[in-house]
Amino acid sequence: MLKKPVIKIILATTLLIISLIFIVKNIDRDDISKSTKTADSKTSTPHNSNIIEDINYTSKDLQGNEYNIFAKEGEIDLKNTDIIFLKNVTAYIKLKKKSETITIISDYGKYNSINYNTIFSKNVKIKYLENIITSEYLDFSMIKNLMIISKNVIYKSPENILNADVVEVDIRTKDTKIFMHDTKDKVNIKSVN
Image (tube, rainbow, N blue to C red; front, side):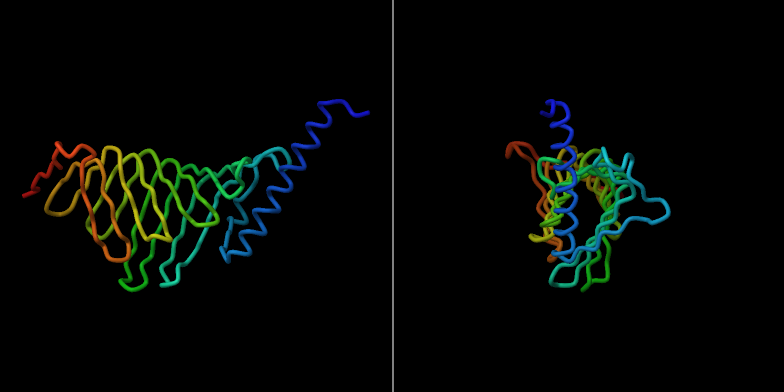
């Protein structure tokens, strides 16, 4: 009869292999191209870890907008293999109709490989045209074409610097809502001129 530690090791290894097979099949099925740099890409410890280095995911919506996300390192959530925790993240949202690109940089990210929703956290920086928004948290939904930016939000345009609790941006229409959590507080706007 096998001892408990041996059974645990066999179960953990089986779970890891099934998780990786499930991720690969889902990525192919949803037509997401996942590529890693062939020369630099490596797994920290091939059979004992769920850490992946130099990650790149690319997806497109029905309107032809493209979403590219890159990370120096990612870790697959063993409880939900559709979720990947990222470090040193850079993302690009390329808008087809406008031929414009939104750039997002953050220390950390949480990427869902099924619906492409991404949460960016810590030192978030969003660049769009001449506008820069910094914050500590960004929730991006590709399906809803919506970015919700919160926690220490500073919005800089060529004309103004704005402090707010939340900025919501509709990627498709560019409609933007800027507000405070407490309706008694006011959005702080300073003119650059």
